[in-house]
Length: 539
Image (cartoon, rainbow, N blue to C red; front, top):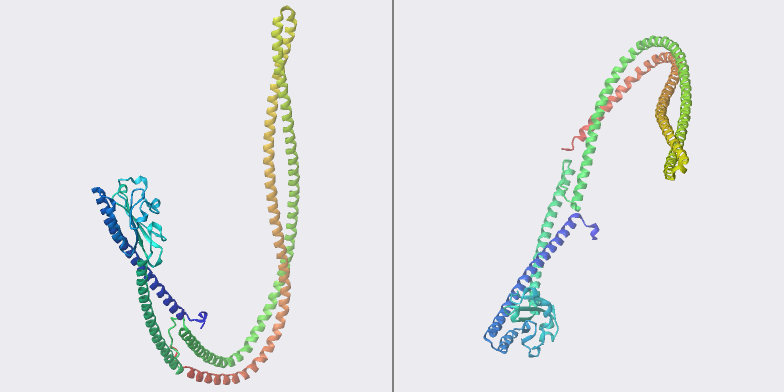
């Protein structure tokens, strides 16, 4: 079976198993991680205890002034542990003083620069021990053999007491630690898988039991449905194959119940209709007798209707005439509005011409003002020249007296020209102010002309609407007049038809008795079918 054809229950079940496996693996991983941390912490504590013992021995030897060769025994005893691949004591600069491999004495310990404390820590300050996992090879720090040929070691360095007394270095192989961890991991994984398989087995057993119970429930419900009990309803709270079968059975039962109910309602309506029809046929006979009287009364009404139609036709003709007069008057009003619009347009065009002339006047006044400014400037320069000439004439004495008189006259003439220029500028200013006021008034007039044009256009549109409505009214009046004539003709035709109806009433009375007998038989058949349908249980 392909995954795409699996039922929802199967998918959910498989998903639950996958989730269970994921949860088991996650819990195992977390447990292994915690266990690894604990084992590593225990390993570091063991190495730290060994390193501290060697550091104490080194400090004791330094304090008593003994030779460091005595520490060789301590170093060799530490090296006897199978996990220790190298052990040594260095000075504060990383130079090897004592080592399990005598060939390393005097060499600089590897990786010392990356592990030594910073200078800011000071030489007299105690430094915490340092643990670094790294890969090493043979001959590094005197390593002669690696357990299980694994290059993974734990590099441990601790000050003897402070950094000035030197350091203890131990290379501890992680191979035995990893082997023990792998063995424990295999055991935990095996136990987890066994527990998971046990849980899956219990789930499969419970699912099979539930499936059997549901199939039995479906068989019992189908037996009761076959006996006519349509009130059965199976649970459909699942989406698997069983749930699909239950929904199909429920849909079939519901459709059958709906069909039975529809038949029941249909035959109820048939019974009701048959009784009403039977009663109606009995009443139809008496109605046929009364029909001739009604026909006579209808004839009188039709004659009255004919006279009324003639009066309506006369009134409609009058309405048509009045509507045509109103249409003519409205058309004249529309023409008058169009004449007013033309005159407003002429006023607007003349107003635009006035605005253009005012603009030209402003430009000419501006040119005159520039000329007056030039005259004023010339008069000012002439005064300065005349003043200078007067000064030069005074310095010349008798020889320049006549020239001085001329200079004074020229100066007076320049002052008069300047005065006249000021008066001209004042007049020009007045003309400009008046022109500006006239321009503002003209613009206001332009706005009012535009408003008048808009109002006139609105009035024109209103008259057009009225003209259209009056035209529609005239056409409607004509239609009414025509309809009235047609109604008069139709009334005369109806009068002839009523006479034919009187003869048909007698024929209807003869057939009414036959229809009554047929309806009685239909009523008996409907009652029998309804009794048959009532044998099904619906609720």
